[in-house]
Length: 209
Image 1 (tube, rainbow, N blue to C red):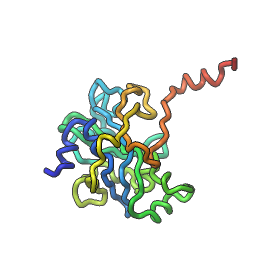
Image 2: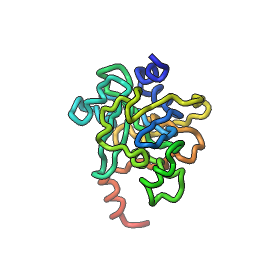
Image 3: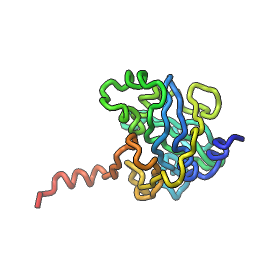
């Protein structure tokens, strides 16, 4: 096995950290991964798509590792995850942001409204859009020579360059510090804590002091 295969076959949190700096290539574009989130497929992680067990949507999460879990969200966006861990544990790492390192003009053409190159893949939906990824990539083997490929970084990102914090946009275990990013990288997305709809509605209707 390669070092990357070994990494992905292990626990999800070290795998998430180790994915920083890796390259994901698809649709003529390559991104350097700068931000990720770890999700464990167990009862202890209510934010995981596999929290309640296997479904047709999340079945690829149950392994083996090194495959793509792609899902559609908010009726408009695709997001891509890397399946990790021993087969049957259903853990995965969401790729939240990246820097375009190859195919810049093609990425720009897919996101014509973006004014700054650092924003082309700044966020999980934008990353998929820049790469041209959609549901057809579900279950793709990422460690081979297929159309969607994940490769190790030329130079690993050292621990001193990695920051950690709470995950974005989840209601369960939202304070768990399983979001990791390359410290100071301009392509990292902005943190926004998830506010349940009921709380937002109550806050909007409350009188101002």
